[in-house]
Image (cartoon, rainbow, N blue to C red):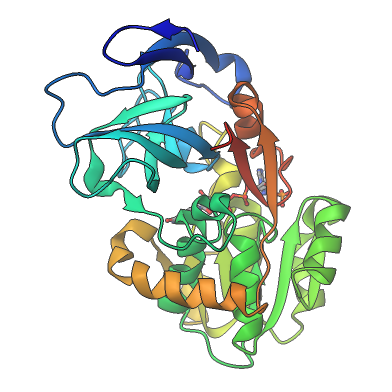
Length: 350
Ligand code: NAP
């Protein structure tokens, strides 16, 4: 505690700021830690806002896009010198908002800082499911879990017996897609970038097969080995060479859900895909999606996935980093595959 300012106790507020717009590979030095203070009472006259203590912050690949000076996207860039934001779980300390009371847990976009004043409360959700780890509300029961749910059920048109391939298969999104596909009666193969991740895919997440793409000199041949009769569904998290190799290996009438292209995040000029003609010859459907277009399905997602979890039908792997000061390194680690499972930063206990 830093002292008492009369209107409210004043405490330290560490923040992570964007220092420079990022060029090329994401670097920790493009972010910086600043220490300020904050009163634990909302300023007089603040209407419809909440003051929260941030407990968990989510590291998500899309945040890299917000660290570019200009890019055409569905969400605006961060501003240099300002605190960055991301999905988090937080506890309400003070409120002038009818929807959220003191002591409630909320999830949604918050600041990368110890305490935040949140005014765009329409994008926040009160955490109602409290018999799972709180951090799951930025993972399994949050945006990545919802992405897996929407991507698999709405975009992939899955059928029992389908042959499903998932890249970045052990990550926040991929690990749930694989488990949903198994529950649906599919044959499921994942790719990931380390021996530990392959072990998890096969022995903890229930994938039928998994391979380390970094050890495969020929990705087309690798996919042929696992799918001799072809792929019905490719859930693409990485784009680039893997997408090109998957196109060649798709079955006629196969479906490709384009969820993300993390392999392209550091390149200024993405390498072209050479096998797009397969869309014609194999009559493929390839569809990009953004989870936020499907928010009307969020209540049914929460119910379905929390029940699967409580019934022991699915598990969820998190990679928890301790302390806001370790947030930038945790975020950067997403782009070299350092994270094993959903990358979360634990900022504070309740
Ligand atoms: P994640 O998989 O937990 O973490 C990123 C992983 O990407 C890393 O662990 C790494 O795993 C892999 N990776 C990094 N650089 C790579 C490269 N050059 N080539 C291949 N793989 C690479 O992340 P996530 O949150 O689940 O996100 C997965 C994808 O979904 C991302 O593309 C993200 O942008 C996208 N996404 C889309 C939506 C949507 O609404 N469309 C929503 C959320 C996320 P390996 O060790 O396996 O390489």
